[in-house]
Amino acid sequence: MSQTHKRTQVAIIGGGPSGLLLSQLLNLAGIDTVILERTSRARVLARIRAGVLESGTVDMLRAAGVADRLVAEGHTHSGCVFTDDDLMVRIDFTGLTGKAVMVYGQTEVTHDLYAAQDELGTPILHEVSDLVIHEATSSAPYLTYTHEGRAVRLDCDYVAGCDGFHGVSRQTIPAERRSEFERVYPFGWLGILSRTRPAHDELIYANSGSGFALASMRNANLSRYYVQVPLTDRVEDWSDEAFWDRLRACLPQDIRATLQTGPAIEKSIAPLRSFVCEPMRWGRLFLVGDAAHIVPPTGAKGLNLAVSDVFYLHQALISALRSGDTTGIDRYSDRALARIWQAMRFSWQLTNMLHRFDGEDSFAAQMRKASLMHLSQSETARRELAENYVGLPF
Ligand code: RFL
Ligand code: PHB
Image (cartoon, rainbow, N blue to C red; front, side, top):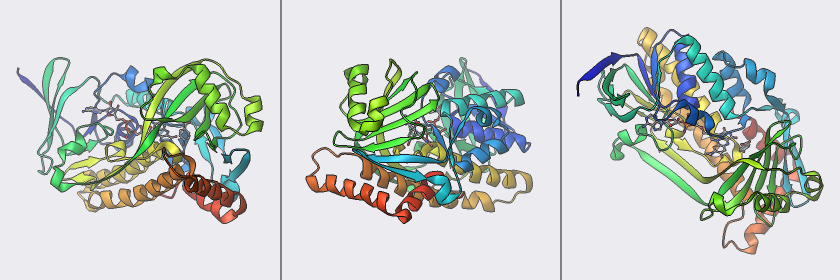
């Protein structure tokens, strides 16, 4: 099969939020990119994932020129609630930190980024297969892949590996050149989306004798709920009725009393994992977002960390490509990892504070209760939580 030859400045693997945002920011700075995505655009847009954006993330989306709909349709949340059975503790983000978060779905962020990239005319190739990264440690890296039945070679200056946890980029770094740190939790989150009024006007993170639940939302008539489930459960095991029963059992009585239920329009199970790969660079290949790190969703940090990686990397690549200044790319991995480890700690701590671990003893349950009681009694503890939740500075 003959090979088509192409060239770009930055080849971006993965058309999720990391790849799209990086491409948008580079394009605005006059740098050309090509995005290579394994699946179809419809499948990328069908994923229901994150819902909470830190203010730094919102600022980045503004800088990328993709915040119009976010500003019009997103909801600013100045606090959230933690509960332990009927004890309710409000964390006043704005009072404690002067900041707030925005509730706006990842699906919408991705949709807005695709629209902006289409407007700029950036090549986004979907259903790309057999992708291989070559010569990453040379000054002339290139990719080979198959697209629409043709074998293609794409030469570039730099490669951004934005291809998520199961992508090829991280695996391209020789095993002896990377260190991986991992914690797999013995449970997952069963999530549903339903066209119902949210349980409360703020998010509720609930600890209870029946395990963890989260009451979140997308808008005034679209709720997103999660309950903790064993890893062995399958979506088919959970009828809508069973889901609502479990959720009710986890929520405080006042909330339960007014909970509106209805058919689930989406239902899925996500396993919980903490994972970091160091370093996030190998020659001219850079890992970004879930390709390099995974957090359990408890702290709402995954998408926000992907955005802070993009913040560091886009600045670094612009300096390198405009003026040959490689200080930023040399520092990228260390700068990104410093922030990542803080978010790792926060989401690990919250996960431990809120979930029931199979086979745990009665002491563990008391420790969770004591942590929530401490939160209710100490403004210092609430401030510490709020500071991490709204996002540490980039
Ligand atoms: P993505 O979104 O996984 O995108 C990677 C893209 O790369 C493509 N790909 C390839 N393309 C070409 N060639 C290959 N060989 C490829 N291999 C893979 C994939 O098809 C995909 O399109 O990674 P990215 O862009 O780094 O974005 C990361 C975020 O998606 C992720 O961190 C968040 O969704 C995590 N997350 C949350 N983050 C938050 O900040 N706040 C939240 O409230 C929040 N809630 C969540 C979440 C994740 C969840 N799940 C399901 C894991 C809630 C859930 C339930
Ligand atoms: C969501 O709305 O999907 C969501 C919100 C907060 C989290 C995780 C997920 O911590």
